[in-house]
Structure formats: C-alpha cells, structure tokens
Image (cartoon, rainbow, N blue to C red; front, top):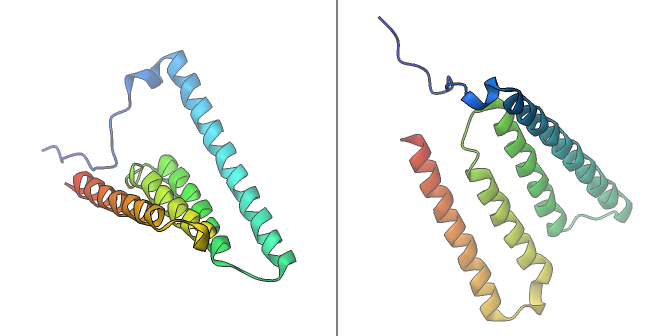
Length: 135
C-alpha cells in the first residue's frame, strides 16, 4: 500500500526540468543568498551604531525585528517549511509599528488611528493566512 505523501514532499515543478527553469532557480538562490548577506550586514551595522551611541532605543529593537523577519522569510524559502506568505505580513506590521514609534508625538491623531488600523488589518490577514495554510 502506498502511504500518503508528506506535506513537505511537494512535486517538482516542470519548469525546473528545463534549462531556463534551472537558470531561474539558480538566480533565485543567488538573490536569496545576497538578500541574506545584505540583511546580516545591515544588522551588524545597526548593532555597531547602537554600540557607538551607547544606548538602545525602541526604534533599534524594532529594526532588529525587521532584520530577523527577513532572515526568517529567507529560511522559509530555503527549507520549504512554514507559510512564506505570512512573513511579509509580519514585516509590514513591524515596519508600521516602527513608523509610529519614530514619528511619535509629531503625528496627527487620525494618522495614528489609520496606521493602527492597518496593523489590525494585517494581523487579521496573517491569522486568516495561517488558518488557510494549516487546513
């Protein structure tokens, strides 16, 4: 009897069997590696900046979360585990939260409400995407 395929054993796309498909796959892998290296360099520069400044502010922590989410998204592409659609949503949520923190008291009240509503909408979208992918 044949066992049902595991969720991680996806069929290989037809595109990867052609020369163009292999070339695109190679380009994708190269760009993902470049994105990972650039993210690590940016994170290192941020850590160095915090060290030189001698203090950590909330914006620094949120920026490190952005870098962490980018690395996690790249890891999902490489491992094939998890939902790669949810990570950009998390990145958007963190970026909007960082924007609110950086603008601080200079923002008009209705803009804070708009941006907070965007975070709520994105959180709902992440919840829905997580439920859809787990079914």
